Image 1 (cartoon, helix red, strand yellow):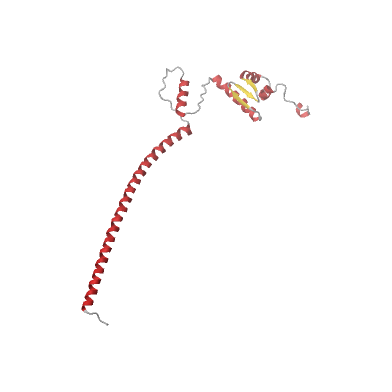
Image 2 (cartoon, rainbow, N blue to C red):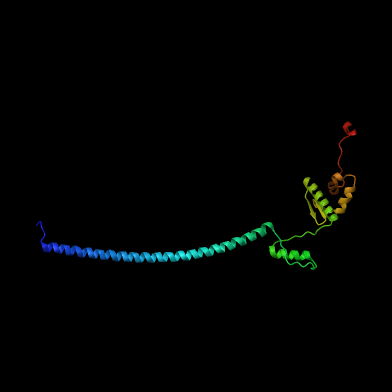
Length: 194
């Protein structure tokens, strides 16, 4: 039983050849199906990449526009720049026109103080000085129009000017609020008589 006959050898050879060819066919079929599937996956991937690249470019373009708009808005809001175009010098009330343009462009509250004459500036400066003096003495003080209000009492510019010409300009605001309160002097001593 040790050796195969020629017929058996031929049969085994044919059987191995058939198995080998069927295995080769199966391997080739698997390779072609895998290659086809890989091509499908690659084409789908490339299509998605193209779609995403287009979307990314579109978003970058939108992002650039938004960045420009945000910078523009940021500059306007931070610096409150007011640019007035197309003002006709023959317009009756330029101040009113500027305020209208400012409100429409900035969408904010606009306060325009009129340019004061030199006398008006001096009076306003006097009001501000007296207000600061009163605040330094821890009193509530504010300017309203052309009057100074110190702790609820209204003081006009005329009163301040009269007080300025009086003998005691040092404590004029205090004297206006409490006219009876003059500075109390201490007892007379040798050092105060000199």
